View 1: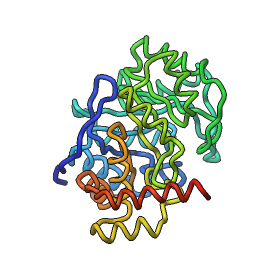
View 2 (view 1 turned 30 degrees about the vertical axis):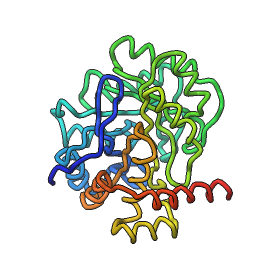
View 3 (view 1 turned 180 degrees about the vertical axis):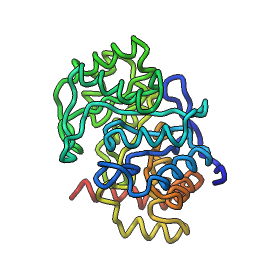
Length: 293
């Protein structure tokens, strides 16, 4: 797979990454549980992403569990020097594929060590603390105890930089009062724009915002407006949705996931798609309509 031209870079701590990366969640089996249907295809997607110039891969040891990290190690180790692997901790999987909180300090430490072991690393470049409860929802409880444990592991050298995921603006501020963060990973896309103010505040402070479910996740984005704009620009709706995110704010880093090389190629092409002002205005209306609903 040929390298593509990427639109800009952004910092996560002392590392700079291209703004369009890759999320490994879909490499696991159905429901992000168990092995992939086609392990060779999963390995091929990872190798194709790096060959195309992707230098930011998002993963977690609770994908599978353990599956995606083991695939990343098999496909890419020894890792390119410019590759930044970002993981998250704070949950664990039940035998029934449930997503359960694992927020206590000893659970977080075990999770970081699981990530290191399965990825074959001595130090994680970036680790996000994923706030529970709920796989999608966010709460307003204090995260101090958990984030202090994350900061302790950073001080020990197990973690280079800290981030937070699935967090309210208040929890982001609470975390920043304990230790510096380099990224926030929350749900955000054309139709789900609760974090508009948070994105702008983080941009002012030079902190990356990494939307999960940039294409809608388990409920893919569906919009007549999106489809119409895509047809006018001779692009796919998903390419337009990704390009809108890239143009939304310079601190947004994207990690769309896929288990298909063809879909990967389609996603990465969004890096060079420039949306005209009238298209952006139309697309902005999708979020306004969703908010009214």
